[in-house]
Image 1 (cartoon, rainbow, N blue to C red):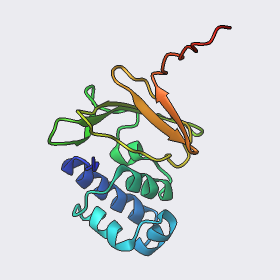
Image 2: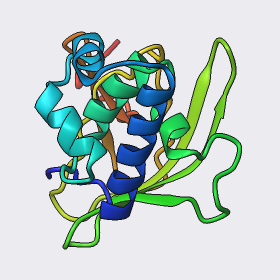
Image 3: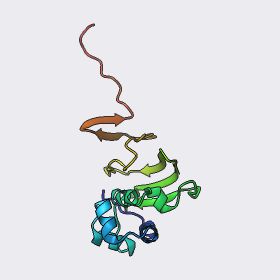
Image 4: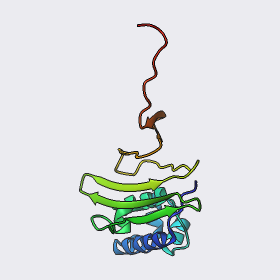
Length: 163
């Protein structure tokens, strides 16, 4: 599944990136160099003409000294039902429910629904190398450093041999 930001979210994030970049006196070229996101893509994001992945927005946010929820403006101020970040035509979706940030820690609470064979892939968030996933239904396959983990854990298999 190609994750596409809700168009209104993409537009708001673009405006906030531009405002924050300009308030810090950074050029597009400098932000591109810091973030690893091309100048052209940054231009399209700021103008609301691109629909970047959350990973791309995370890179830009880190280069600006903030986070995805910080750019979205939901740190400690999310609406009660959260903000719909993306959805698909088959009714998969993700809402950012709440975010809390301190100097040393950023915590995001998400609610996601994946329908059928749809998948959601994500990489590590800069500055937040650890994740915790709570699965209410179904399973999650996490791959970290080449090691696979399935959540919830599978029941141990019993050997047919006697002890």
